[in-house]
Amino acid sequence: SQQGEEDPQALSIQEGENATMNCSYKTSINNLQWYRQNSGRGLVHLILIRSNEREKHSGRLRVTLDTSKKSSSLLITASRAADTASYFCASPMDSNYQLIWGAGTKLIIKP
Amino acid sequence: GAVVSQHPSRVICKSGTSVKIECRSLDFQATTMFWYRQFPKKSLMLMATSNEGSKATYEQGVEKDKFLINHASLTLSTLTVTSAHPEDSSFYICSASPKTGRVSGANVLTFGAGSRLTVL
Image (tube, rainbow over all chains, first blue to last red; front, side):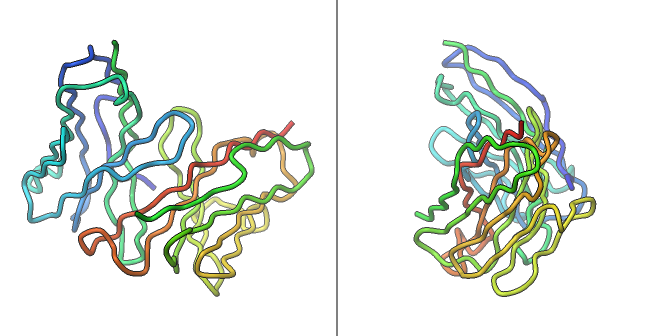
């Protein structure tokens, strides 16, 4: 089941520009995670932000979390062609590590 | 870091045959593994939760007899698609979470590279 909704569904930008993707969720969360999936491959964990955090950085990635609006955003700065992938947000459902997934944003970086 | 190996990466089979997909955690133990199915340009659909030493928990709408899951050890879970039909063609992905040493104490998943099943 999915509780997250992501927008945009698809995003195409020029290399070097910043890319922002948004995720909204429905229920209370302990943390929210972002994953990347290259075409035809498995997913790779990018970054986790806890419910008591508002912003987190990792390299060119910046994640924000607004629990009052039940939303999160992922910003990729100075995009590169290698950033072309689908990006998913996910939040844990229970202590059994099951995650609830957003629909994903397909990001295309044009050289 | 944690690595999950999934094999085969691609498999083509005839209708009516069974196909087994393996998911191994290479450098950590995983009491729980998850199996997903992904349709083109879609998000992950959780099929079942695989628990070591016990029966898998299937999501609503997923046929247990069709998709057999076995989690015989802390490092191996298998998904067998029985009597495969063309509508079973899809991308199947497994994931696992380490028993210990989780990222920031949270339940971060490590994914296999996925298996592309094509049933003719």
